[in-house]
Amino acid sequence: MRIKQYLSTHPRTLITLLGGFFVIFGLIAWSIYYQTAVFHIQSITPETSDFPATTRLITITFNKKLDPKTDTSNMVFDPSHTYTFSVQENVLRIQLDRPLTEGETFQLSLMELASADGDTISKPLNFTVKYVEFSKLDKEEQTRQINASDSFESSYKLVDELPIETLQYSIANRFPDAGDPRMPIIISMNFNIRTSSDSGAPTQADLAEYTALVRQYRTEAINKVKSLKGYDPTQYRFEFGENILLSEFDGTLTGTDQ
Image 1 (cartoon, rainbow, N blue to C red):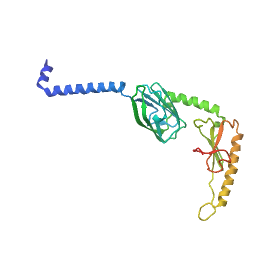
Image 2: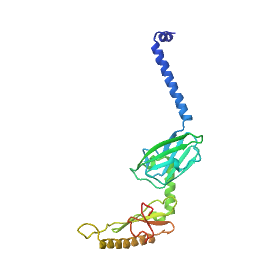
Image 3: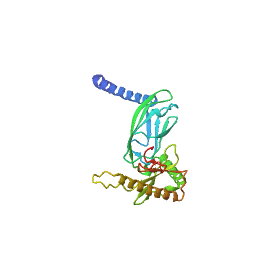
């Protein structure tokens, strides 16, 4: 009774209380509507600000089932990345073709990605690659890394033998590219072209000498790889750090399709 009397003599208080009630009710109603009706992202694994340098998998969970006709036009990477993806109910999984480098940043733009009932979402996702301790990775990524490591080392015997470093050349390896299961063996020279002219520009004689040295030590490095236990020419291919003699050695320039 006292409260009723108080409110009757203090109408502003009543208005404030009613206003607060409607605001809270409105927020609750909007939250329920958003969670059930508005097509949106529920979670992203790993987190965009802490993308582990060791992972290649992005898992995005939505609040609605995805359109099974989702294709690569709905996912645009900047800078460009080669990837595969799968859709399962309300989960989109994107598998990058290569591990990323600590400090690297990239953007994944969802472009008119559709739900099964026809709603769409367009949203840029900005990722920063960092070193993340194994113990802090999610369980799925921990399991993936353990299985991948075991499978990788058992499939490619040369992993235990590399890298190799000499005064003249370096031999390293990287993960196979998507669509080509052969592991790239990267051979790079540890010397530059020597110039004999006062201008600093290499002469024809300098170029000839450099080419001869690259041929000599590239041949030596390839023979070294082929002599390693476990080498199988069907499992490996050669990439080179210098853009010369590529066709002669049946290889490509590392980091390119040349």
